[in-house]
Amino acid sequence: MADLLALSERIIDSGVADEPVNRVTQELSELADGVALIESFSHVVVIRTDEGLVCFDASGAMTGTAVVESLRGWSTDPVRALVYTHGHVDHVGGSGAFVADARGAGRPDPEVIAHENVPVRMDRYDLTNGYNSIINARQFGGVRANLGIGGQARFLPADAVRPRVTFADRLGARFGGLEVEMRHARGETDDHLWAWLPEQKALCTGDFLIWNFPNAGNPQKVQRWPVEWARALREMAALDAELLLPAHGLPIAGRDRIHRVLDDVATALERLVADVLDLMNQGATLDTIVHTVRVDPDLLAKPYLRPLYDEPEFVVRNVWRQYGGWYDGDPSRLKPAPAATFASEIAGLTGGAEALAARAREVADDGDLRLACQLVELAVQAAPDSVEAHGARAEIYERRRKSESSLMAKGIFGHAVRQSLEVTGGDVPRRGDGDDTSGLRPQRPRE
Image (tube, rainbow, N blue to C red):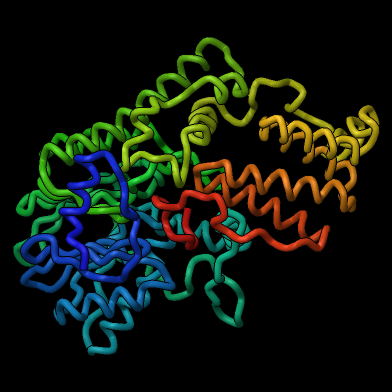
């Protein structure tokens, strides 16, 4: 079993992530007296109290049972409370395993605590079940569905437990001798909480720290809140914690080290938002801002800020959406013609879809994969049954996938490859060829 605190200390202090930082081993590590972390997807933080165990997050549907088994290898105490840091499925999806464990032992169900927007999120998942299943298959290259009543695929597992206790801003609770201060802050979600355990001088941060660039720009999901995210990190840093317990990535020990990490992540978000707003206030279009705003490369090189899941360019777009709506400043895109109509017109001007596809290959060979993708997309929109156009599309998007760092970009570009190979009948490229996945989260359904 790895010494997680020693591992994170070495990686943070050296600035070199020479081992994976997002691990899913299902192993439990006791980090302090009565404080443990189970490495899963997501992690589960466990605190032993005189009234039983207090757990933060339940992991996902595919890992919940393994988490409970690991927990029971450490303690047979009842789970007194289960706190959701937020309502994403990799944090609440395994809750059914906790309830099953309690009932199997003839004990009361855990008291489930969350922010008041978590039930609202669960209702939204029911309304958008198909959409969320589709986009996760696209983002992660195919995921197993959770089956509900009658075998219908469900994004949110049917046995996911809704919280019984909710709050709006802050909630203080005591379990035996354990004092827990829960605070709401918008960040990755609008239903997120983080917790301060004053006696242990420990922070339970949920997804406010994920050991990747903050997931504040996911292009396929609802609004994120980078300014509020940074503000929450500043509040955490002011508490001078000695132990930080995230839901993804490695735990961190030491006041100065924790403060440095929280400050770096907050600074990256604050500077990015400030730069976007400055250009918006000058009247710049979204296109100009996307291709202008950059995050300091020295920050992105830090082992807990690498853009291997989300990336700054997507956060730029999310800031625009938060403050400026969906109109991007180009009047031709306010009420455009159908994409296929526009593509057919361009193809007609350039000699046909095959000529566009050939030019896309040339542009890709010259190294401009952004432009090449735009051209080849016009080609297949103009001629959706063209094997030649789709062959070029599969080839170009596979090159694009390999060139990208973030899992989100890789997932979408990889999906485009698979779409075109269905037309050409070609083989799906093997995943991982040319990819750097050392800091990626495991490929499971999430937001």
